[in-house]
Image 1 (spheres, one colour):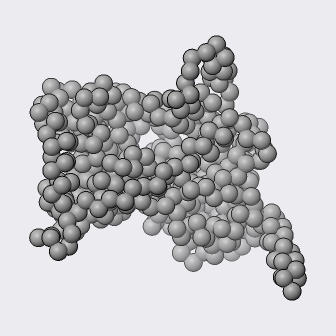
Image 2 (cartoon, one colour; image 1 turned 90 degrees about the horizontal axis):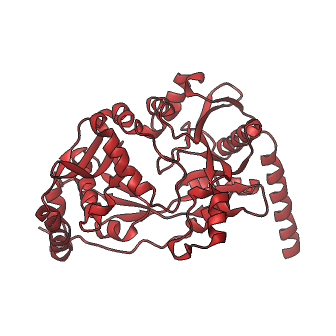
Image 3 (cartoon, one colour; image 1 turned 120 degrees about the horizontal axis):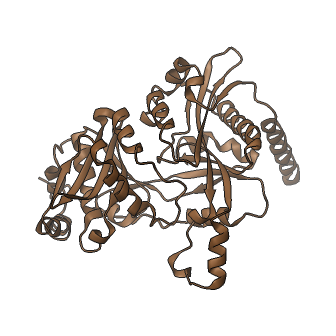
Length: 414
């Protein structure tokens, strides 16, 4: 009986795989520029998908995308020409030189120098369903009544078509869909039959903002005394004693060179750097975001030493781009102070939560942020992964976020 059941299961899996490898009963419009597609259909599908899938943002982004990124867009329709899904993609050329080995393995040898020289000339093309400049599910927006299996089948076919069409410019060695979280992980599970592998990445750290907090002082007052004293003595006090001030920058344009310089100081120290933002990107982002964006800066003696851009995406504030002077940060807790700027700005923006993104899990957990599971769907064609893919997969391994509760116990609150 078990053998029969197993045989039937295998047959069903083979049949499902065969079905998915065939064309979906859908129709597609695929374009290099969003202006080539039906704006009304895009707006209809993305109305509830947030800022990062909005027509205005994506059109503005086209003018300031990093040099190694090229956008692709798709609208998926059913047989009756009803819009089913909007898909945002990026083709990115990543050089092996952009994938830095861990510091522990950086031993200067003649062979290392030769390898680094070769790496500077080696690139790989990646087809990404989603936005490498953001974190979150900013890849697909579905019609409310769309069948998940059918819609994701259509997304897979779009990715196949885009990858096939771009072979003239160079083959994409692997395809990834980012950033997958529930319910999208569950709804896209059928893609495993097309060799898409789900890989969990570092979690997104999210701090829920109490509706009673009207200022950062209210947030501090909600903390247990140990955490509150630690913040005041270890973060705020050294910053204040150094003569640093916190300000809001209403117009980035005049300071865009300095903002870009501080961004580069952080970006170039990262292990994985798939792109580098252009200087004009920051004022363009501020212009299209309008009142939903706040740029907090840390200054000393008139010089900007750090910044954090916080952007309201619906009820969620995204602690988005950060940059700081690394030399100054060696003696001052600039990064930690900027995290608190994000909390303050999120409250001022009227949001219910702040998304701090990945990395630096410990300090974010100490603020009260909790992990939200993120992952990617990855599909590669070559059985032997090259250095780039090995490094990418190695970087996907991550530590679990520490469990911290800095807030007063309910019985002690008030």
